[in-house]
Length: 152
Image (cartoon, rainbow, N blue to C red):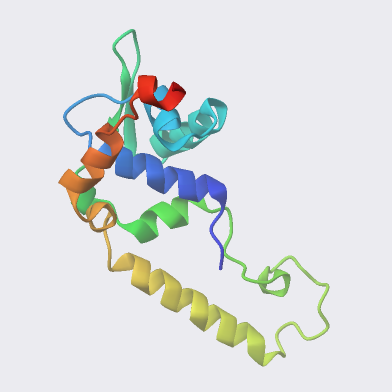
């Protein structure tokens, strides 16, 4: 299984918000840190708000913050909400009638078992586990290259 870029960006945004719980974070902050298009990050942030992972505060001093502690946000929940489907192959989609073997193929149950195992692993971990070492992750984000020496 391969997660979409949208889900990847959602997890990255949530990690950034996890290590910046002491302040509101702008979409621009996240975009700059990860070198991701601001427009794309706006779509991701909008969906994170929609799924109640993030709270958005509007206004001049507005921004984003986690809706609950990182330890209470399960990675499986993020993936389930952000991914549009989990069909590892097209024949597993109930509306797909292109395979003659649908419902008579051993691969179907094997692939469904594999997906269940994948999600079972994600259910064991929270967003806090993804952060791992908060002070190290924060220092990586805080490190800004020296503009003068970069241009020299």
